Length: 195
Image 1 (cartoon, one colour):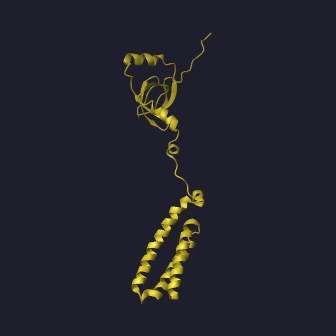
Image 2 (tube, helix red, strand yellow):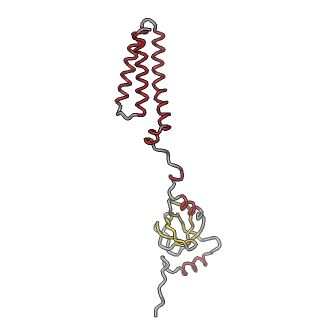
């Protein structure tokens, strides 16, 4: 075998090995430059060995180089996350439960959609509503809501409920007025009896 052919093959193997190492070793592109020069010199030796005497072999060699470069890079990136080094360097994708903040609270509040409560403070647009004795942070749907008015929970935004004015089906306008007059104060303060 011609010495030019030997050098071409050895430089090809060296270039591909350095290219594979580039995936694992952060070199700032130095290994990539070494790979580039190794492959270019390999092609020069291949041309000397086969370029004029066996052009078909030289053409096949060029195609082989063009195919091996992306294969080696792809194989390196395939192996990287499976190595201990790769597991330390690459971040794992977060689980879906980690992407949704407060999943238990969100699930609990989601069950309240469609229910009715009363406004404890003026909602303009934010404030507090009371539902089954529980105070909830609320945002109104663009309308200002007075304290004591009935509101319907129509959605969620984070851990706040979105409300709009509405009367529960079992209550009519008379019951609404009575419930509004029964509300102590927006924050349900009780004052001691005067002596």
